[in-house]
Length: 438
Image 1 (cartoon, rainbow, N blue to C red):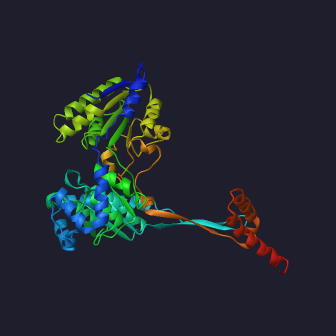
Image 2: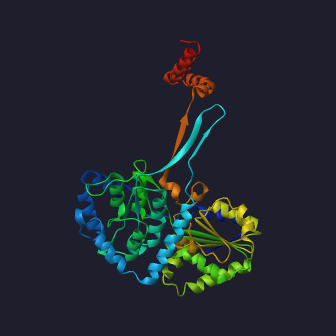
Image 3: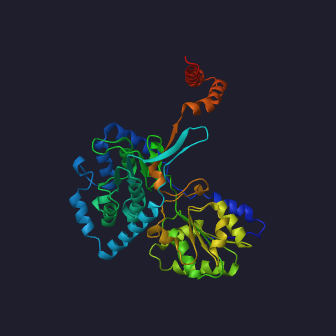
């Protein structure tokens, strides 16, 4: 059974803090193993990647077969049923339309002193997109990573999608094709992250790596950060639903299970201002767990990390939600827009009873790569901005330098950086010489 909490109970605060502090990442100690894999790939390149792929994915490759050929991609795409192709195409179209609107504008202006200032945005030159293989092989993740990169104008995109036992997911390859990615490597794990970060004889290094993965992938991303950029270190999925009694308990139960079925370490929380409704949702969850295909996973998640929290009112619900800073937040109330201004921290917000979180996973438009483990307090989901760099621009005129240069010289001296100050003073002296005919 999940935890049942009520904000009016004497021990609520301690129980809520325990819920927030629960360690949901039960990964083995993998960092030393990952460090060895990265060092091996850096030292031996293709040979190390090929050996590790044979060891972990039971797949024998050569440098020539590390990537799918165009003919292989064509053949796999042809296997996709028409209904799934149409759904993926609609998803790609909606995701692209949403992310096009995220493109920021360059700016340039002249300030009162006559200095020309501004910024411009330019894409990273190359990005590597990681797509998990096996049971967690999701074509939607391809679209969510590749399309923002393509919209940003990234010049070279490469996907690493492991194929354990040689079994490819046709939908993943179709998603790559729809996203404009032609290079798909059939490798995974820490070795794929190392290859993307440092390059091998066959795999060209990239500037940024994005995409979810297991504990080994996450540890590898941590280790290569600084050599390349990364999106985030994602933890187990999570959803928080704020719901009043004006909802179908079964709908809310299914929304909670939509994340619980991802992973035994996922977390689903309901916050409601109605005790009876909270009990009805919990009963609906138990009924659904009798029939769900992934009931073993969802049941363990709900049992170990699930919670139903009863609050005095919706303002208190919003305050608790902000403390959780959930990856996904559903506001299923009579007037969700009225509660929205009170929400400060959430990766993605789904408003109203007709907006299940699953829409956001596939076809809503916003990105589903989102901050977890309370990191929505300080970070955002994946976007076009993750594949862009902002470069500042400045151009001084003689008049502008005369107006602001002395302050720069003074501050340089205060920091004991003599050459800094002299580089400004030399120009100011040059201006004075010109003024006096020197």
